[in-house]
Length: 160
Image 1 (cartoon, one colour):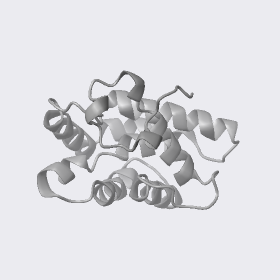
Image 2 (image 1 turned 90 degrees about the horizontal axis):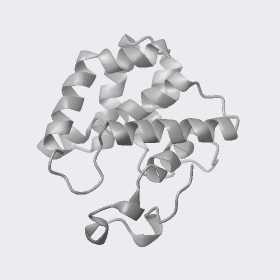
Image 3 (image 1 turned 90 degrees about the vertical axis):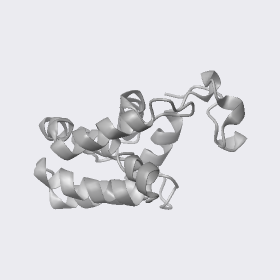
Image 4 (image 1 turned 135 degrees about the vertical axis):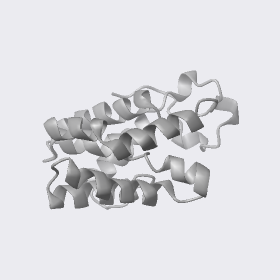
């Protein structure tokens, strides 16, 4: 996972992530912090292994670490966090040694990570979408009653 480690050290990643942490320091709802990022990556990788999908751990973790990075631009500039995250990923990933086809797959996944976009449930973007949603602990959320997520989307039981 040498390439993934380069993401963590990347100047643009660090700047965006540090600013996002600052912007969310008083957020009561689901935060987009390291706990969330790692939960998404780990759940996603479990699903990838279970389904025997041909996706490397570097791609899974790279996608997880970059998928919400655009939130800073959403909060400060009103931009789509998916589009901004995809833009940032397109800038960061090549500098970290990812192949062009991997960059394209990760960017596509980040751009569509808020909805199931493809018919095939084993498509990486759909696996990632599922992992992102399963990463949330709605059972123990202090803001559960105020949450805008529809009841059917809330994680009221543990999986993975």
